[in-house]
Image (cartoon, rainbow, N blue to C red; front, side):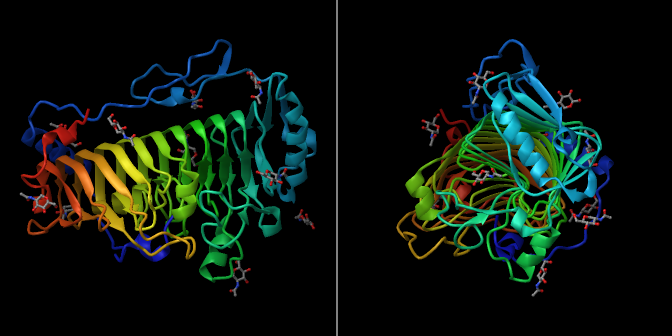
Length: 485
Ligand SMILES: *[C@@H]1O[C@H](CO)[C@@H](O)[C@H](O)[C@H]1NC(C)=O
Ligand SMILES: *[C@@H]1O[C@H](CO)[C@@H](O)[C@H](O)[C@H]1NC(C)=O
Ligand SMILES: *[C@@H]1O[C@H](CO)[C@@H](O)[C@H](O)[C@H]1NC(C)=O
Ligand SMILES: *[C@@H]1O[C@H](CO)[C@@H](O)[C@H](O)[C@H]1NC(C)=O
Ligand SMILES: *[C@@H]1O[C@H](CO)[C@@H](O)[C@H](O)[C@H]1NC(C)=O
Ligand SMILES: *[C@@H]1O[C@H](CO)[C@@H](O)[C@H](O)[C@H]1NC(C)=O
Ligand SMILES: *[C@@H]1O[C@H](CO)[C@@H](O)[C@H](O)[C@H]1NC(C)=O
Ligand SMILES: *[C@@H]1O[C@H](CO)[C@@H](O)[C@H](O)[C@H]1NC(C)=O
Ligand SMILES: *[C@@H]1O[C@H](CO)[C@@H](O)[C@H](O)[C@H]1NC(C)=O
Ligand SMILES: *[C@@H]1O[C@H](CO)[C@@H](O)[C@H](O)[C@H]1NC(C)=O
């Protein structure tokens, strides 16, 4: 998330033209033709699955496909108990509150955690509810036409403790509203269905933000804390009050086949924010929102440093969408627990302020290391590649100005961007330059040929890059940065 101003990055959203596919095809052919070198090794994929396929699997998304990371989720056995929300008195009329029905269902299903697990089906209908918690060995299944609607009463989103790695709510001091669907300390959870919908009806919350009467930090649509082996797939998530999907302190999470939508001006409606989490697979998702489509984070300033919980082994692949004032994929700005071993590939981003953006600041501490970003296609993205610092966004006065973040081993390759308006803007943090950068096979069209890269506190290597990179990236460094050990 970012303050509105920081996310806009000072650029006005302009109108655009839709490029025809014929022209796109021509451009691709041109770029391929111009760069007829044998493909060089890119970053190794550090990520290892660590899971073995279990027998007797009900939900098994193990594909054996090297182009998929869905085996970060180990299959789960068929659930012993399957019930419907209607069995717990639920009424899907879009008006009756089902908060008690959901909570009763979960209380009942908790008994099956060690007795074969359970599944709660949500049939076609409109199921209004306040926040409810999930349990372990549990599947929430939204049938075709099922819509879970977020309550419009803030009291149905009670206040919970702030995250220890943030020390306070992200937007307001103190606690924060719980997410609509919440889980803490869970294992083996599946949230899926036949493209059913969870609609946070976030407008009320965005208005509280806009009119500055928000008392506590807004809730997410779905937040899972301290959880392991989670699959979130094949659903549509709409209108989150705040970041849409927030796995924090989690491991082995797969988010696949999701459609995530929010109005393009809805504040801080990030799509997916893996935060201090390990082995996260974000694949085949379509996202349109008012903030970053995907933002990788790991805690905020002194709180994140103290907690020291990194985000590592994260793959973001085949994500497409638009966010006119923010970024396709962001790393940071909260990165104080460290972020490493990140693979971002095969993105398609259009009509956005930035394509790939790395954000940090003094006081953050932490590091960003071993990031490989490749095969990115963009149209009408203003600044295709952007590193930035400083929106003076700290949790409180206790931040340490000497806590300087470190950046090493960031490789960006095979990027084509058409109808972009600015050359890359690479602003490192003073005393903490970006080092070992690699830019390779990058073609940014639309940018005036006189446009200069804006570089501060960066050094690295560039090859087959248009427009011509800044001196800090020319004849400087080594191509080994494009394929580190
Ligand atoms: C909607 O629910 C409220 C309270 O839950 C009730 O007073 C009202 O009559 C309901 N309206 C309709 C159209 O069912
Ligand atoms: C869940 O089910 C698995 C077997 O599938 C079992 O090993 C585990 O103890 C159960 N409970 C929890 C909390 O995971
Ligand atoms: C849900 O879990 C949170 C802790 O993560 C707890 O504060 C809250 O009371 C729980 N809500 C319900 C309805 O059990
Ligand atoms: C799921 O529903 C959304 C919203 O209606 C739609 O855009 C999307 O294409 C659907 N996905 C699938 C796989 O049918
Ligand atoms: C702010 O927005 C909320 C939610 O829509 C509304 O209830 C409230 O009356 C608004 N307050 C002001 C001061 O405009
Ligand atoms: C998504 O739905 C499709 C079609 O029903 C199914 O084949 C696939 O296994 C599901 N994927 C996941 C990850 O749930
Ligand atoms: C980055 O990758 C190198 C080479 O694989 C490894 O030695 C180093 O520990 C990694 N850094 C982090 C922070 O994971
Ligand atoms: C350069 O990048 C473009 C766009 O991703 C890709 O189509 C092309 O194959 C790449 N060229 C090489 C030599 O890798
Ligand atoms: C933007 O795209 C259109 C259609 O492909 C093209 O005609 C136009 O020249 C492009 N503008 C720039 C600045 O690249
Ligand atoms: C290499 O990068 C450093 C650090 O940015 C810069 O001071 C130096 O001028 C660069 N060297 C060349 C040859 O461009």
